[in-house]
Length: 255
Ligand SMILES: [Zn+2]
Ligand SMILES: [Zn+2]
Image 1 (cartoon, protein in one colour):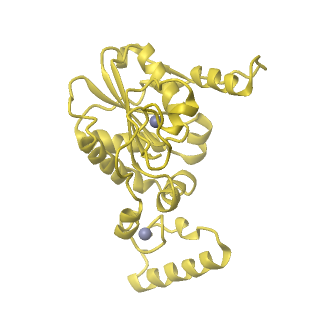
Image 2 (cartoon, protein in one colour; image 1 turned 60 degrees about the vertical axis):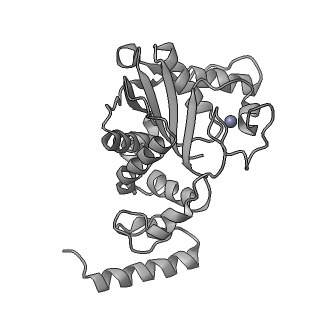
Image 3 (cartoon, helix red, strand yellow; image 1 turned 60 degrees about the horizontal axis):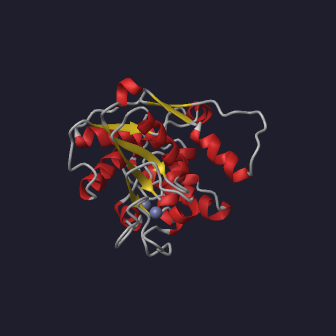
């Protein structure tokens, strides 16, 4: 039985009050609500919150897509690229939003509260972002590849959020989706020499393997939900290039 609209709006109002009292984002448990604010929204995200997920404005770092306004630009690299210490293995990167406020709650909704229904529409939005960037001006040999989630997260969640986003992107752009192009490798467990930073970089490098048959000679649009330090996207791009990909562009919801 589906609840009447009046009953449903009463329930939503009650959940919002509980949310205010407990500080927990309880509305995320209620389907048909906006993941960012709890108001009624068919697609899982209302118009007001969509507009509050602010797209980065102005010029962005050509290496990683970060806007100059947030990070000090020196010698042509943004702060993140300077911290990373070497050029990223991808050729371009674009994010739809800053990873804060509404965008942060949105990601929380689909990552930890099972709000999978927002991913397809968000993928279509990402496709619009890729067109505007423009990451997809040249479509020859272009494929969409998601950064695979860790097996344990996928099992817990019941889905892989980057894969669902990537499907939305591929459908909207009408370019092929290759969900098995990248695989995560088991992380080495034995203690290793080197500083913690060196160990982490080495682990991340070992973190992915790409299938040559699926990517060799092709151009890859790599899709992930959030790019933070850029290390994961870098490791995935490196694996793709090692397997013969000609170009790798990163497309993320938030950065
Ligand atoms: Zn909202
Ligand atoms: Zn950068």
